[in-house]
Image 1 (cartoon, helix red, strand yellow):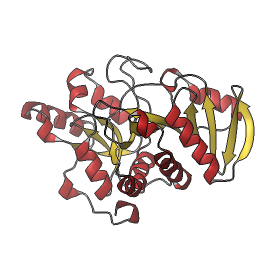
Image 2: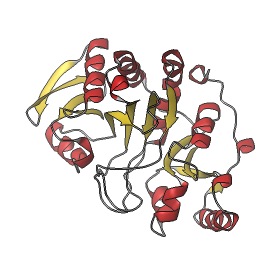
Image 3: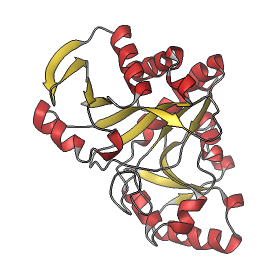
Image 4: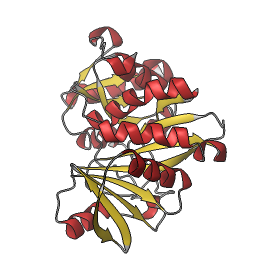
Length: 279
């Protein structure tokens, strides 16, 4: 079962929830935590009162309440950035170092590469129509779960959080989402928005799980690469944005990746993908 989760403290997430309810015929479920819940096909939509970043072990409570296995958790959320650029983003979660914004220190949450990358690709046409940037974000923040999870967000200011067209675009993506059939990879290097990995995911047959930027590789614990692999189920590939790292560090990371049995790929190694959502 897939669970779509809004938080009462997140205005963009609540608008996404409203659009999901408007666009499809949901049936009422038993309430969760005293709040209404709805079901359609293999999805349950619910709301939690807490700020989602700090609600650890939600998947455990969902399984107990609904007597369903949690296959995927998607958090409906706002995005905030200093740039203020209108953006639609998706990202895995977890902390490479301290847990400043929820979750557990030096702990990554299982990623959902084929679902998350499919969401990125499906968002692209809507982003173009709305003049929103569509991008990955690097792995960051809480909460902690033991089930595959990703965030889908609209931002980056209050104006975009209130944009019902952006909320509706996210709702449409989630209602029609199917996992992308592509080789699974971890992504390393680059800035917070992982521009190189975003570009490849939109044009090539590759599904990214955890995305570890250059700043995290420098500050994270020594086994961060190993944890990214462990929390990206099915990963056989790694893509390293070499230009963003010193050459000695590139060589060291490549040796670690090879020792872990991952194939290090370049763009030329990846097949082009001509599916409609990438147009």
